[in-house]
Structures are given as C-alpha cells and as structure tokens.
Length: 365
Ligand SMILES: *[C@@H]1O[C@H](CO)[C@@H](O)[C@H](O)[C@H]1NC(C)=O
Ligand SMILES: *[C@@H]1O[C@H](CO)[C@@H](O)[C@H](O)[C@H]1NC(C)=O
Ligand SMILES: *[C@@H]1O[C@H](CO)[C@@H](O)[C@H](O)[C@H]1NC(C)=O
Ligand SMILES: *[C@@H]1O[C@H](CO)[C@@H](O)[C@H](O)[C@H]1NC(C)=O
Ligand SMILES: *[C@@H]1O[C@H](CO)[C@@H](O)[C@H](O)[C@H]1NC(C)=O
Image 1: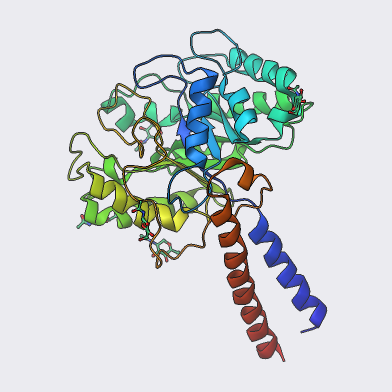
Image 2 (image 1 turned 60 degrees about the vertical axis):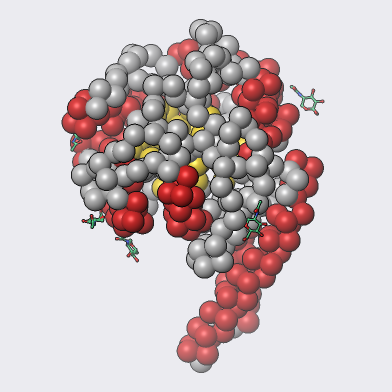
C-alpha cells in the first residue's frame, strides 16, 4: 500500500471524526402548565442544556415540534431568536397531524428566515416533517388514544412540499426527514416515507414497550433490538435518535418502573453508547406535556445541576462527544473540558485509525 493511500485513509478518518455528531434535547412549544414558551423561556432552556454539570458533551442542539409560536396562527416560534442568542443548533419540526395543509408551518418558517436571516439558517441541522403521525394511525396508536395522525402518503407529500418551499432559501441543502416511533419505520405500509426522506428520526422508549419484556433489566436488549430493526428497515437512510429516555417518576408501564435509578441507568447504558456516535435528542431536559403522567426531565426547574450525575462510565464504549464549534468556550461553562476531550479522543481515534491502516498495509504487503 502506498504512503499516499495511507494518508488519504487517515485524512478521511479525520474528516469523519471532525464531523459534528449532534447532542441535544427535545423542546415543546408550551410549558408543563400549558403556557406558551416565550423567547426568555427558550433561552433559559437552551442555556441550561449547554451548562449541565458533569455533562459528557456539549448539548447544543434542540429539536422543535413546530415552527409556529404557540397561540398564534403563523408567527415564527420564539425558539428561533433564542437559538440565535445562545448559538444552539436546531432540528426544526413541522406539525403535520390532523390537518390537510402545512401552509401555516411553511409561512412561519419563511417569516423566520426573512426576520433572522443566516444568523438563524446557519444553525439549522435538519427539518422534520411531522412527529409520530404514522404511529398515531397505527393499531397501537389507536389503542392508546394517541390522537389524530397522518397517513404515509400525506407525510411523503408534505416532505416534497417542504423541499419545494426551501429550494431557493439558505436551507436548500439541509436534510429533510420525518420523526416517528421505530414501530412506524419498520411497518412496510410506510415505505413511501422511507423512500422520500433524507434521514429517519426514530423515537425509541423501552419503557413503553410493554409487550417486549420491558423490565428495566432488559432495557438494553429492547433498545438494541428495536434500533437494529429500524436500521435494517430503512436501508441506507441515516437513523437519528430523536427521542429516547426513561422517566424519573410516573406510573408503571408493563414491567417498566419509573425511578431516578432507572433514569440514571438508562442514561449510562443507552445514552452513553449513543452520545458522539449517533445524532441524539434526549427526552428530555424539561417536561412540556402535562397529559403525560410520566416525567422525564433530567433537571428540576432548569437547574444546571441535574437530578442524577451525568458522567458516562469509562467503559461505556462510545467516544466522548466531539464538538469542533469554536464558540464552545463562549457558551458553556464546560468549554474547557469539551476542548480537552476533543483533542484526547481525536488522538485516540487517530491512533486507532493508524494502527488499523498499518495492519492493513502489513497485510497487503
Ligand atoms: C445577525 O447577527 C449580527 C451579529 O450579532 C447582527 O449584527 C445582525 O443584525 C443579525 N442579523 C439579523 C437579520 O438579525
Ligand atoms: C402499519 O401501518 C398501517 C397503515 O398506517 C396501519 O394500518 C397498521 O396498523 C400498521 N401496523 C402496525 C402493526 O402498527
Ligand atoms: C428482552 O428483550 C428482547 C427484545 O425485545 C426480548 O426478545 C426478550 O424476550 C426480553 N427478555 C425478557 C426476559 O423479557
Ligand atoms: C444489533 O446489531 C449489532 C450489529 O449487527 C449486533 O452486534 C448486536 O448484537 C445487535 N443487538 C441486538 C440487541 O440485537
Ligand atoms: C459525578 O461523577 C464523577 C465521576 O465519578 C465525579 O468526578 C463528579 O465529581 C461527580 N459529580 C458530582 C456532582 O457528584
């Protein structure tokens, strides 16, 4: 093997490593007491996310469910200026259930682009057209009274409509996808959506899998099995984990029990193997669904001291999150540790890459 080839491989490894893998949380448009979130509420939330004590990485991405400010028709959601102010990356969402039109969602987005310009669009990492719409019209969604949903064909058409709408904007190159439960992604009736999207957003909660042996002790198996089935069902489409987590309080669900220990254990055994490897939006920093008796928030009242220690175990098997954003130290009190883990993990990956290349070179020679 020629030296140039070796360097090319090392360089390509380097590029793959330096690419951002997003670490984030989900954020609803209203609070847990059903009030519309204002810019200041979003700012507080996004700042807390970036300043969490003992965080294994910089949580500077947020997934939204809608572009529309709560209690308005098509005013851009105030999460946009809050993201600009806190340098938070955005996985945008368009609410697509129980409607025949996404015009208001598109209008809010277009106004947001006009109002905040590239300060806003530079932060957008993806657009999800819909959220769990196909789950709601599935057998289990109907059984759980999940509410109005949307059929696959309608979602696929909305995805096309979004692409058409952003093609002459600074968002034209941003991946357009859809978020749904893993069960919706493995359902062959929904293939039209798999074919249409750039990425697959999978919501995956072993806690809710009451027909899969969902005692906490089996959470890793339930998660692994569902994640594998999802990846197998969607071919080469990248799978982002758009919601996962374990509740701290709430009712038993099958054999699953909500508790602080289980939430911490789930973070360590599932979260820590995803962070830095797969785009992950944890559920969640701050609860915002009063109808859900299970409470997932890892902080109380947006304190930067979480309810449990977020440190990842040394044997979690995942590289620490790598974030190359130059603004780390400006925005997070963990800027220092983020910078040092970046260089050390980059080094260990490069060393691993080099030894692999050397082994291949030796074998080829
Ligand atoms: C974008 O940010 C810059 C720097 O903060 C500011 O001067 C400018 O007015 C912003 N542009 C818009 C459209 O908000
Ligand atoms: C698969 O999707 C179809 C169409 O939405 C739905 O009717 C069916 O219930 C789904 N199957 C399962 C097992 O959820
Ligand atoms: C654990 O989960 C796997 C995957 O869902 C399932 O096949 C298995 O039966 C579960 N084990 C127990 C003991 O419930
Ligand atoms: C998922 O797939 C990976 C790779 O194919 C395999 O190593 C792992 O055991 C699988 N996990 C489960 C729970 O099936
Ligand atoms: C969290 O755990 C880590 C590793 O054990 C430890 O260094 C750190 O001090 C702990 N943080 C708190 C607030 O106890």
